[in-house]
Length: 132
Image 1 (cartoon, one colour):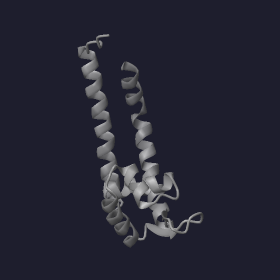
Image 2 (cartoon, rainbow, N blue to C red):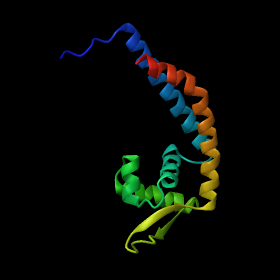
Image 3 (spheres, one colour):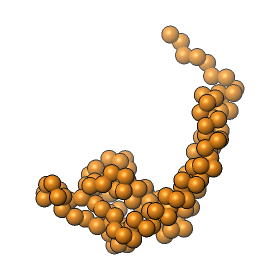
Image 4 (cartoon, rainbow, N blue to C red):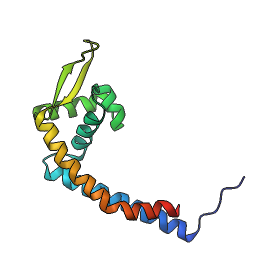
């Protein structure tokens, strides 16, 4: 079966969708920097909060990075007092990452901003997705 040829409208829709994604990414990068974080640090905090009990290796998988890179990232977040390492309650050989109170507060503020931006972009994204 031959794939359907893309029309001019398809290309316009794909370009519009890509622009909307980039607009959100740009917003997200600026918001993280305004909070004193790199975009990668923000993404790490979000992953740690979303999936409690992550190890450095598991966080590396979520961030699509190498474990040694994430180990350094975790070290920096720990120095900023945004995360802490703790032994697992289930398996003491396992060290898990958890947000501190400061980390929770920082992430809460950033997430409120991101949710508002996504709500602003929702009509555009929905219309573009419907076109595909």
